[in-house]
Picture 1 (cartoon, rainbow, N blue to C red):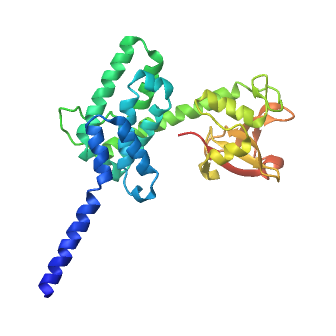
Picture 2: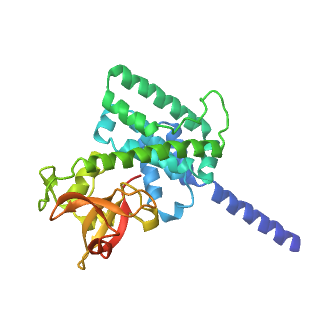
Picture 3: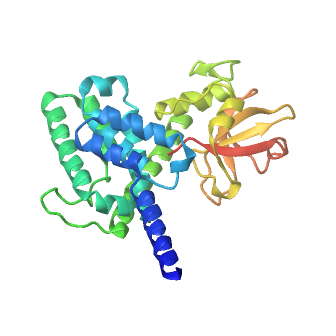
Length: 302
């Protein structure tokens, strides 16, 4: 009886292990992708990403990234949804940047390698057609992403450390370029007068100035300072860098915002729209009025 009991326990364990490792929802995504039904992949991935029960796996993000990269190769699809290129990149960067994600990449290397080949052909087609706008968008989204992925006919395994190092370097350079561009565009507005509800170089209020500058960096922000604070990714003071945002509260909620111009570890300095002087650079830490009203820090830089 004891022997039969343990045999039953082993059988149940194997059954539960099999049901855990073979998730039918994941199998369905893979089947859809293999068959070229990319919109079905996207719907299934979005469905799983909305359910916390599947948060333990990066597979929905992996297949969503692949499906988006396949779908945007359609000129009309991309024209209506240009933001999806960066979304596809962000999803695959997240997968490439973790050990669990690299397990997925290595076990699905043929898919990733084939996608790399498809995207390369697409770039060639865009260039031949003279479609410079879409070519530039696609090139930016793919920059550094597939550099360590072998060609489809090589069947070579990619090491996680190789891919992560390559991506980190590309991502860091891209983020530095974003920060430099934000400061460059912000400083061009120095001297522009303050104007209530102003959001162009004829005159800015605080949030109008920030929205204008960030839009030049292809970031759409809410119009009000309080909404910008709510929507931003929150930062600790020690992690704030150039191009991030600083928010202020004078007692009735967040009502002012500026763009950080100081480097990490330097005295906190911002460029903002002052009601008395217009667009100016202000040292927050040496000005009691501003230093006592700091509500927090946030960023829209990805």
